[in-house]
Image (cartoon, rainbow, N blue to C red; front, side, top):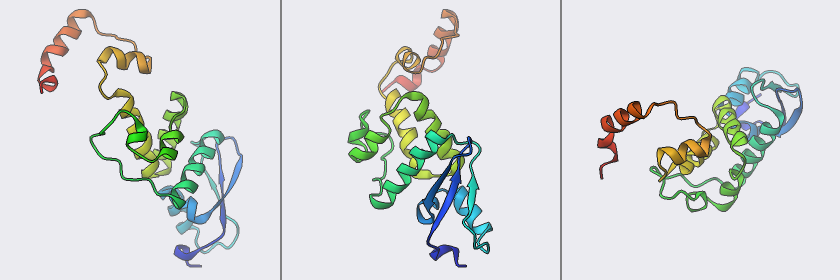
Length: 168
């Protein structure tokens, strides 16, 4: 069986054991899945790919992304980001896709990294970067609920050591 021209579907199995039938072409957006399919290319049965690091709700979003990306590829994300508004960086569907709660956004980053889906990883990381863009350290701490564990003296020292990077 030639894996490159293969049609049909594969079952992606979430951490909870839920299975998601997906077109092989869509599933192959994941380099992890693509590698597993190539290793299993001589097996004619419907292949099941366990993804023990990906929760069902997150896998559902990952599949949604991959299916949409197949029909409307995402425009390349310019670096550095030209805007803190994702709608000015990528098409509207992609900007809306990552307009989710922070917890889900970070789970999507982990899933994209684990499954090796570069466009999804680029999109989700760019979204986090857009949340940071133009903000002070205090605003960033508040956005991501990060405690400031520096004493005022330590913070002053760090600011002094790094003031070169804030100069125009």
